[in-house]
Image 1 (cartoon, one colour):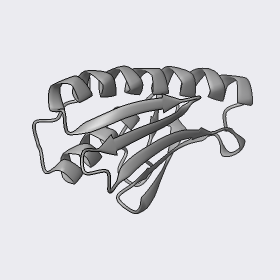
Image 2 (tube, one colour):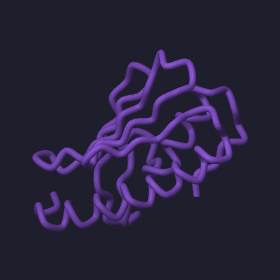
Image 3 (cartoon, rainbow, N blue to C red):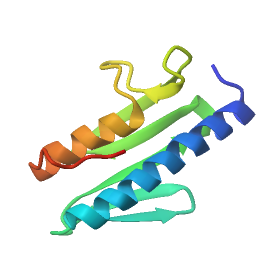
Image 4 (tube, rainbow, N blue to C red):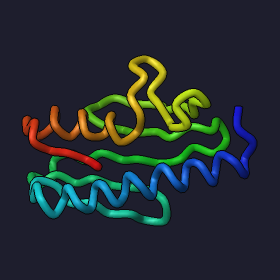
Length: 112
């Protein structure tokens, strides 16, 4: 497990990359709105009936995504040098891209 300082540095970097990718995709898509409230990211969809929430969870050294009635808990992978979903091996940005594509039924959404 990462020590707290390393977790904070790596999670801050990962979440900043995700934030920039979401801002760019928000501008292109128009199907969702991105908000960052003191480290808690909210992705709110046009109809207002649903949202995704992304938060770092320092005590367990994970990044959590709440989306589609499911909690995704990403862990640091030394091999990938990224936060990944252990079940699938998907890195944070690729997982979020997949979740957005599924939720919006839009395979053209790309996060980079």
